[in-house]
Image (cartoon, rainbow, N blue to C red):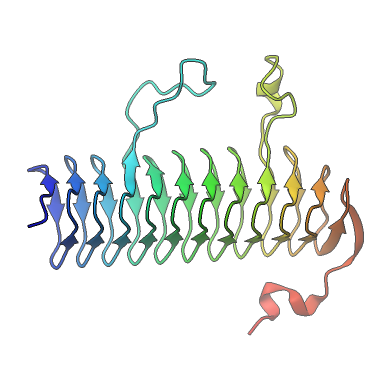
Length: 249
């Protein structure tokens, strides 16, 4: 006896397994072999692919409810969440509406993914990571525990983000209308690596196969294939070509 609450219009594929006190709202669809933990809420219209595993207390497809003073205003319901086949959603994870997660990706325990985000295939979003709205994350990227990915960030394929990295998107820190003209998160290009506790300031671009050392503060663009370190970060040397993604086995 699972004591699940399933809306009559929800659809469950064959061999789905539901824990206790699961809630599946109107129009949600679960593919074949989906495993749902205890106390999970799957919001209206969410599309969950075959073989997805969802940990206890996860919330999927939540509609945003901004504060009255927030700069983000939502006037109508967003399109539903889409989770690709083979994904793993961790315990206590929260993923908002109008997000797309590619196949075989992991959203780890207590991670948060805000609305209007695109996450590619074979991506890892680690424990306690926050991914804010309007963010794009490419295939095979790894974001380690405790990182903060600000809104309007672009992260390309095969990027590595170490634990506790912080990104930012507003040089005015919430004051003056001027900030809206320049609000932009960092862009991290293909194969770049960002070390633990590094800080990326608004609008910077970290080039292809670049390497940002631990605890660096990146205040300007990092050229392709360069290692930077320090506060502010400065170019130290080239990244060896044998470390590039295309040269790995």
